[in-house]
Image (cartoon, rainbow, N blue to C red; front, side, top):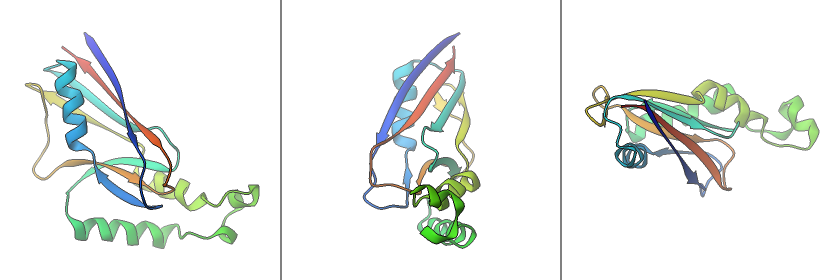
Amino acid sequence: MKSHTQYLWLNTKNRQEFINITPQVEEVLEKSGIKEGLCLVNAMHITASVFINDDEGGLHQDFAAWVEKLAPYGKDKYRHNLTGEDNADAHLKRTIMGREVVCAVTNGKLDFGPWEQIFYGEFDGQRKKRVLVKIIGE
């Protein structure tokens, strides 16, 4: 069995963004040479997420509104922020949206259902963060 590891680096312009990283993950998969196996994609920061869903702008606006309703931004709302931080909401949003995905690799391609894409969800951005892509297989 072979394995291949690569990191994607992202630096969002906004505090909260959703970025389609499917093309970058596909490039890593092609570089790996692995034809059959699994691909793990993991946000390496506790205020960011990786998830699979549809690449549709209205849905992404719905996600943003939904997580903001569940965990609104605000310094005075959370005990974590008493430590001098202001990102407790981002930790909670990450938990809601998930930290990683695992995708099947079949015939050298990500084996997705209709409309599925991989997204990086940033909830405390405007600084450099990384995403792990690890592929194992033959």
